Length: 61
Image 1 (cartoon, helix red, strand yellow):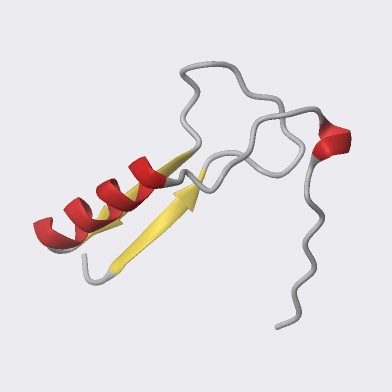
Image 2 (cartoon, helix red, strand yellow; image 1 turned 90 degrees about the horizontal axis):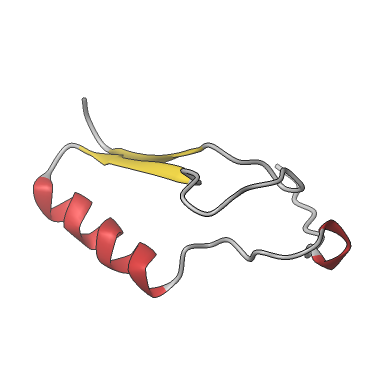
């Protein structure tokens, strides 16, 4: 495996429960995994709330 990445397990609007896996981080080097772990402890990237409270994001590629 080369590089690093994130596999999202939950999509916007899907229901989750406490303990559900939201995403999995992978990396080729232990230092990269540690960096990602520390960053995810500061901010998971997810907000838990009712569907109508979800932030709408649009992106063009």
